[in-house]
Image (cartoon, rainbow, N blue to C red):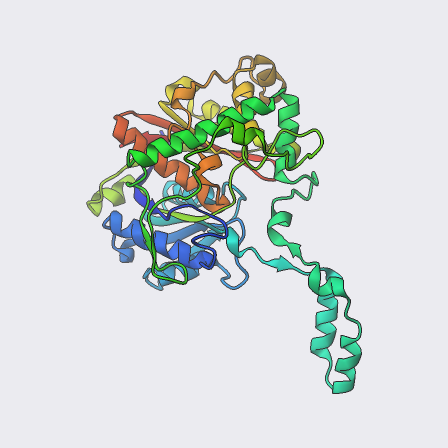
Length: 431
């Protein structure tokens, strides 16, 4: 018997804004709350009908433990509805969705609110262990004399050399490599030159700009009002650079390997704030409530791989998904691969079509297949839109399903690489 599909009723997202811009003062809980409210409203879903809430976040804030619960209650979800925060680095949003899928298959609920969020602007500074110990000694001092003695142990490095938590978060503790260094490794492995990477990055900006001008994102973006300190309305993603040229990209210096590298901030994804939410459920429950499906999640796959080559996660995960579903790469009308780096996407395209890679790394006799660029990231990707890690996975899903509907097409594949050496892939179908 075929496994039950998950119905995706619809959803909404905030605009994706570059870090330290429009959402720089907005907490992750508020971004997620906004996306939850908008998704419920757009789907005409009563929060009282929900069975559970799942929210993905890669950098959960210290002041909102179980972020899913905080955001759900602020969004008006009844107290009796439980909520769970999940974390799978860049696949955290997808993990929220697949948790709902597993619940439906297990018969443990029929309607769910799922989301993904990241407030990268709010990433904290982290003090060293020596500085933390000093702060602790000062706090424990009971008398003025003891406090003065403790204060005398201060060193300038305690106060003026904190680490940026975001940098630590983007560094894999197993390989010791920051994500951009893994992209450099793939560029060398697959002989990907700087010009090819910059050309890919420019095309991402061109596609996003064309989509914005044609109003393609209007169906997914909910204009955000009052999320930051003022009441200004933000209605569009702000990462795209309309006047960008190859010449401008060529002037940028390599960022992760300053002497020999090819990966720059121009051909990498942007550090971004944003949130996405979807209403999903079982086919029976969605029909009972009279909700109108946007599409279906048919199957999903997660895999592990070399953390130093984590960017190849989409190839490994897609191969596992195809083996699980019996489909081929050409069966998908649209494909969304998260653009962590231009080098990473180009490496995946090369690995997809390589028989040698398939035999050596995937246990297949033949290549996964050649991916037509005309059906890949048709509205651009994270190089121009930005990549809030907890939210991106669901953004790929929402974008793909809306585009399937617009084109009257049938199937989409959404996939991404995951820091730490994992990959995720989802098989979607239009309603």
